[in-house]
Amino acid sequence: MEALKIDSLTKRFGGVYALKNVSFSVEAGNRLAIIGPNGAGKTTLFNILNGQLTATSGRMYFYGQDISKMATHRRADLGLARSFQVSNLFFNLTVLDNVLLAIQGTESHRFQVFRLTTAYKDMFTKAQQLLSSVDLWGKRNDLVQNISHGEQRNLEIALSLASEPRLLLLDEPTAGLTAAESANIIEMIRKLGADTTVLIVAHDMDVVFGVANRIVVLHYGQLIAEGTPEEIQANSKVKEIYMGNEEGADNAGVD
Amino acid sequence: MGTAKQKSSGFLWQGQLIRFAPHIIGGVIFILLVPFLPTYIQSLMTKILIFAIFAMSLDLLMGYAGVLSLGHAAYFGVAGYAVGILMVHYGINSFWISAPLAILLSTLVAAIFGIIVLQVRGIYCILVTFALGQLLYSIAMKWRSVTNGEYGLTGIIRPDLGLPHFTWHTTSFYYFVFIVFAICFFLLYRLVKSPLGLALQGIREGESRMSALGYNTWLYKYIAFVIAGMFAGVAGVLFAYHNGIMVPPNLDVATSGFVMLMIIAGGMGTLYGSLIGAAVLIIIQFYAGVLTPERWPLILGGAFVLTIMYARAGIGVYLYKLYKKALLAWKP
Image (cartoon, rainbow over all chains, first blue to last red):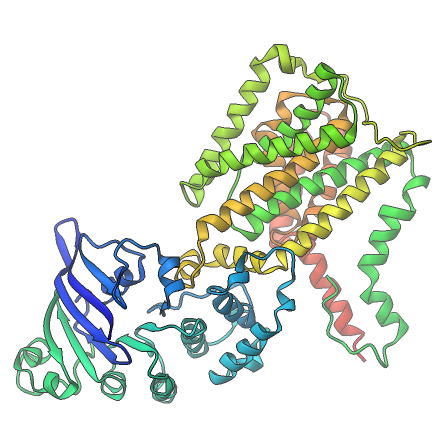
């Protein structure tokens, strides 16, 4: 079963092609890494998949359903979640409120006016589990603007996991983290069940090779290679883009 | 407000006194003290409560949902004029008929304007709300046969509540307004603490994240816009009864700006800040107006500079922090 199918997606900003005729598909349960130098169109691709940008042409299918023209919030309802490269959190709310909002987002009571938020006990239980898994339960009453960058990155992941998505888009989840903090996040992604399909954009090769079983390489908006990590490592075109020589892609992507 | 987390056991009575100080002070001033005050003060306090309802409605929209509006007086004015027109032209004096009709009308106007305003975002909302507000102002000015134009719609008297042995005087009208204020505060307080209220704050903080999480952000902002228009209508109804006359400036940009200043001065996104902001601005307007009828905005401006310098988040928030500090100081 294909969780996601992208069919000749093109995005043009004026005369510049951010994405040019990109097609690939992802089997359900797979972990696909999207790599490529800066400006390759990785985040643009996420923004289009998420619905925050509209593609110039091309289509996308989510479990067979055409979502090309669907509003962002409806895609979320279907089970598509994402994290952001630059933490996109509710900075003037508490850590707990951030997670509650994320959990509530796909629940039917989100329009409820006549009951207090505190009446939804199961939501609090879930928030506790989620925050404990990223070591933030102790900081639940802190405003997000007052917690550290690493903690904000963890919260960013927690928010994207809150709806138990079928397809999770992670945009540079470990950006700016220490090695130990990165390892933690890699571990979290590994632990996700097979019912969650993961697309991950990363520069950090530890993340790419630690998590992914498939890799797609973008370069100037074009898909230039697709395959297993071993195939990609052996691909001469990829080596050329990253290194301009024969050294291999292991330590590539450090800009 | 009473979010202190202390255990009540082993608490000094002074601590409890401080804990409930805002409620006690508020209760004494707004409930017990009023009958003993001169009538002009009672009337001033009535006006404060009316504008507090008005300010809370704008706070829901601006402070919680983050939608800027410089035309909020439109819904206030529409409801006030509706009450006046029903009374003056149609002789309908029953509160139970004219108030619901007036509030329904202001809600409808908000429902129509909201669709137009929310086509744009952020600062552009200011322009569109301003333009729509001025449109209603022009109607109030030009539709003389109905609104009596710039001379204002006079002859609005206090409504018939249908209660036996009930007479209106300054004090009974004050308590009437107080009860309506208390109901509005309770409803709005529940609303901002509901799942929908939390969602509105999320939209204020980060709309793109909210849609990625599954929220139809436009619809939420629209709901907030319509509810805000409805509560502004409640304030407008009371204002018409209080003032006895509706004039076009009641729905123009000056009134919208005045109520916006109230929530900025009192503290946005707090609700109680609206009451404090309304009190501060109306007291300044009243006493500075007595002192120097033409230059009172100068004093208002000075007060604003001081607020921004010493209590940027708003006087209400500043007082709340002091209250929290006092609570901590008494922690055993």
